[in-house]
Image 1 (spheres, rainbow, N blue to C red):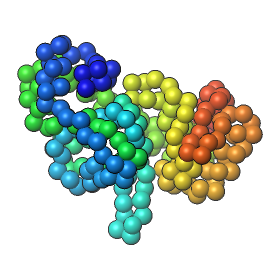
Image 2: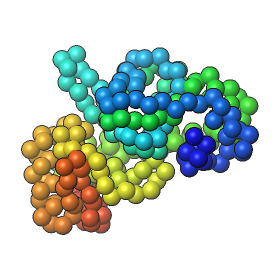
Image 3: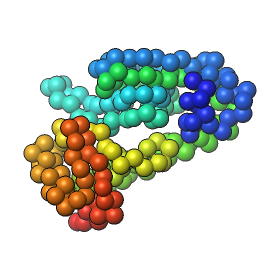
Length: 222
């Protein structure tokens, strides 16, 4: 756990005694595929970071329809907003495959922050990243046509939590259709066109970006 925290943007710059405190009150949880980690409306009791595996953030309608908000991968934090504003969970978090999670309980985190308020700077940085992402998605959905929206979403999905770039987007065409509100057939048509142009490679459970500059041009077209 210590090595994981040292490599994580939220806690990597903590002094040794504070880091040890986080290690002492945190726990590793292992969950199986399709496990509901928390549901929309749940009372928040802590926040999570993904050590391995993926977690789907979803919303469900009364008729059983599901909207996929995000698929979070190793290194990502989730559940932090509800931890700090005290409001119920805003979405369902569901394991996609077997996962290993770092659970940071609310009581331990609040106690640490009371004594070490400078840690809030890291949390504010994380929350600002989420706000910027939300604004980009709102702009994309409002202004761009189908190809531009798909290109923008793929580019965003290549950015990891610590602002690195991973060219592999491990989402199925069905996942992308749920995220963008498009049909799977429309997604497939565009991805096939881009593959023929050499922008991407399609795989069974995802896409690899081959030409970032060309895809950025697609994202800028209106």
